[in-house]
Image (cartoon, helix red, strand yellow):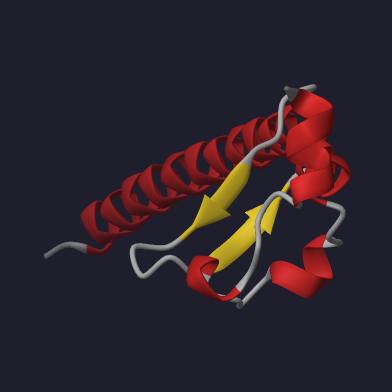
Length: 96
């Protein structure tokens, strides 16, 4: 391959990599912004939201869930739903 053609090919390859890299950075920024919006919606939702895995182990909960149950999220994360009284009898009476 003549030298000039090789340099052109390398230049095109570099441009292609740069475009892909720029697109990746833009996508990552957009993803982070979306994750931050979702975290804010989750945390400040007026309704209690609980997240747990398929085994019933708590992964997270929002502030409304803490207020409803009286538990701090640090107390529940990693705990099985079967191990705790999710809503105390006092809170059930208050809600009904």
